[in-house]
Image 1 (spheres, rainbow, N blue to C red):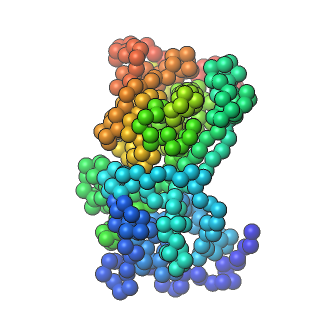
Image 2: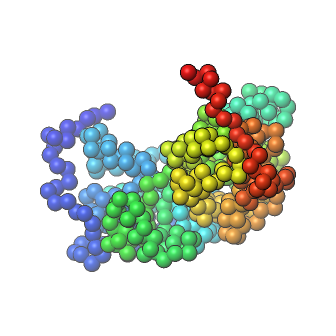
Image 3: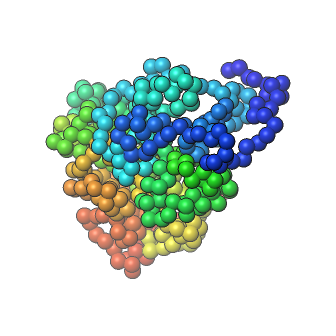
Amino acid sequence: MTHIPVDVLGNPYGSKVVLTTYPDIGGVRPVPLRWGESEPSQRGPVIATRTGTGAKTRNAIGAHGGSYSVYNALAIAGGDLPPDFLPDFTNTEPTFDFKQQPAWGSAEKIVAMDPFGHIISTAYKKYLQEGYDVRPTIAITRATMRVGEIAEAVKDGKLPVDGDIVIDDEGNVRVTKVAVEPVWYLPGVAKRFNIEENHLRRALFEHMGGSYPELITRPDLKIFLPPIGGLTVYIFGPPERVSDPSCNLALRVHDECNGSDVFQSDICTCRPYLAFGIQEAIREAQQGGSGLCIYFRKEGRALGEVVKYLVYNARKRGGDTADKYFQRTENVAGVRDMRFQALMPDILHWLGITKIDKMLSMSNMKHDAIVESGIPIIERIPIPDDMIPKDSRVEIDAKINAGYFTTGTVRTAEELAEVKGRGWEQWEDVAH
Ligand SMILES: [Zn+2]
């Protein structure tokens, strides 16, 4: 990589720092953008970059890449990346051409992602040729994946090798993957939370350390690219079946839990439920339907791992019982959950899902958000009891008591006090 010595080049931004812009100052002419137009050319491209003439022509607040926008700025600061770099999108087109859905042209159904984010190199070619920095916010690819539990299910004969989805007896599975970065239409996001747009803008500005002053000074800019993680859709079976109402659909909506998902910590049911979700999604696809797993980057109920571990400590030191499970989180975080599922169904509408035959989730919050957005859920399937790690009973029983779906027993408040997690005693015996 060429390293450009910034000191030699001098200040690439000029001597004046433009802290913010206003709609009525000279030269501010955002590229027109009409959220909810079904024709991409009528809707207009999302443009966020500030470099060059961007500060005056951009129509979105924030920066591309979600949380990775910070690394992008660091790469520029360090001289590894020129500030005016424009990507070359040759051969990056989607591996599957998703059929346009009615929701793509709705300012109500989709407010948290750009429905045309995957086709910018064709839909906004003219802008790219004119030198505008239009960037994809959706990418679609295909891959072969292998998950331990799935390989085992294949070995045990629970999932057949069909040569198409499960391609061999080692448990390799073909998948179509869709990565989505968040693009928020602020009036629509405010509406989902039943708050005023101005109130949302002010709260975002104030509580992100005064970042993005245009949230306040540019009420004409309705798009915000928040510095948060996005989501990935894993599709098993032919992707065209996802929006076909004559095909059964199995779905797992999963929120990230790195400790369990990747490192298989046994304090929660995340990884086992994820593996079960993938297994049932594959099974549905093998039976002529469609199976999906949607993975949201909302670590620790969107509270992050630092808060999560503080809560673990409070639980283990305070006697880890299910009746106090949520209180421990509330003590540290002020709330029990910050995932706010209100924006989650956008991806389902984008995919053209009109009903879910098998919902592989027990969360009442996910269920309610999906059903309220107009997608019926026909059957809800809890995680099988034999997949629940012993130490995670505290979590699952507390959740069931708080409204999570179950076909089994709902324990009373008194009974919850009897559901105890493993303490640290044995750990401390061996770790000293
Ligand atoms: Zn977890």
